[in-house]
Structures are given as structure tokens and as C-alpha cells.
Amino acid sequence: MDTKTQVVSALARRTGLTAQQAAAFVDALGDIAREELAAGREMRLHDIGTLRVRTLPARQTRHPRTGAVLSVGATHSVAFKPTLGLRHTLNPKTS
View 1: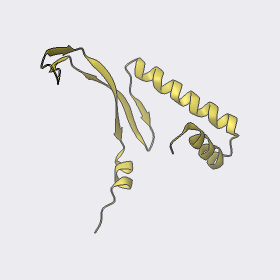
View 2: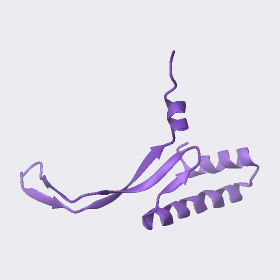
View 3: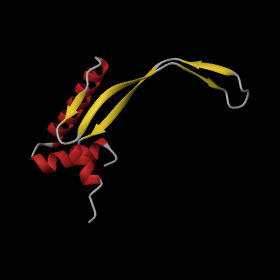
């Protein structure tokens, strides 16, 4: 699914919620994820995986054209670790 509208439609079909209720659910889930991650906590999504904040340390790099050394500060990124069940679904064993 590429868009929020598609997610909302699928959620409404599978759960019997109205489109407005499903949209409110999707919005609330996004808000909760942002709040938890901003507070430095991980968010576990049952049967899907875990979202956590990953800190990338400060480093030095070079400008590709000039070769000048640049300092890049520490940054934060979101990392996703899928559950074992999801990994098995995506990579079934062939025997």
C-alpha cells in the first residue's frame, strides 16, 4: 500500500470501522509512534516488529568535489527490526 488512503480503506474493510474511524486510528498510531520515539522509547508492534531510535555518531567526511574535510554531527534515525514471524513470511524456507 502506497498511500494513507489505501491503508485506511483496507483497515475499514477488515475491521468494519467507518473510513473516518479508520483514519482516526491511523493518525493516532502515527502520533503515538512519534511521541514514543521522540521520548527515546522503542515501540513494539505485535506480529510486525519494533521501531527504535538509532543514534549515528558524529563523523568526518570529505566533500566529493573539493576533497575538503567536513564534520557531520551526530544524527538520529529510526530503525525497524521485524519479528521472526514476519521474517519467515517474507523468506519462506524452500525444501
